[in-house]
Length: 311
Length: 234
Image (tube, rainbow over all chains, first blue to last red):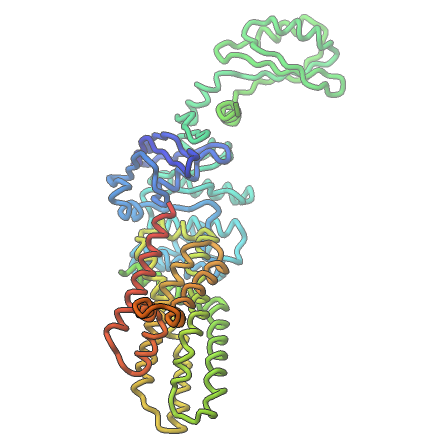
């Protein structure tokens, strides 16, 4: 549905987006992740035709962005970051204006406004000026604006920023619902959100794609490591270190600050080998008291941190 | 074209949902009313020459105040991005906003129709120059609106947009005054450039294509410059 090839954008001499390429299939939800200033917004702005790329190609559906921008705009709904809308207008007036510009006929558009209003939960604020709405409601109005003409492609720039946890869950729910039939591209820097919502994530750092794969696979290939958390009472740190570091499969052992005299350890292990059994046997041979023993797989968050570390 | 109309309608309504429209219209009527009637009974003539004589200078102040928000506000709150990613062209946006500003200037002139009506009641009024004057006023307003739109596209700050627009409109109004200091060839050029001279021709009741061409050219140049400024933004 979307094909992006060697997309590059310079602001004067600063390279904001550097040779990005990716494809999005129809019916896929793609998350664009990256730290602040990584080039997410710039990429989305080029995708929606608001900014002209310095070089590279973008194709949405059967249209190329250079010659058929207007056609692309017709099938694409876009919610810019922080939903900038006209403050003086009433929500209903604004949505009618959008429906008008989208060329929807006057009879059908009230029905559609009600439908979208239901979906986004804004029917109770229809007659309020947008400027007086809270951030969450404004975001929803922005979402309604983007979905007005039931677009083939929905592009959302940080759709959940500034919302409370309940609203975030609702918006994610909406995105997932739309994503079943349509193509959705959204940017975020909240990782759990990408994990919960996306089929696929692309991580951008300094304008470059540093990872592009399905959420599950990203964890497998890049995660590749488990962490084991241990808490032991009645033990000496040095002795514990000596005893457990020797276990095969443990690549690193960190001693954390003790809590109530109990020693806490984090063991980093390769995912291919499971040292848990041996660890347990070794601990059982001593007179230490085992208080805690659990394993964690590296999460998207850790992968993200790993990939976008400075320097 | 449909898009331009749609944007124009929205912008025109936006004027009247915010206090700007009422403030601008009130100030405009206060200033024109006071300047016109303070000398009207002294001159003791049943015409509106005095009113139309002042109009270019007053428009030079008022029209940029009307147009200043058109683009500057969009840039400032970021709604420009939302607007441009809807299926519209640059030119739809520019023409729509321009049409809204011209319609607003025309709406602002409507209450001043009370002046010729009053004057006609007091003496015999020659309606020719009045009709010419109002026609000229709309052309003048449209030219200044195009200039103001250009000024508004330059910046995200409405005050800056207002001052730039004011400077250009004021310059255009009074440029013939410096013709005085120039050799004859230069003075001819400057008096052709002056909006005031062309407006006063129409306000005399003489509708000359040269004057209309002048106003249409200013509109075109203003709108084209706006187009170039917006194009240069990405």
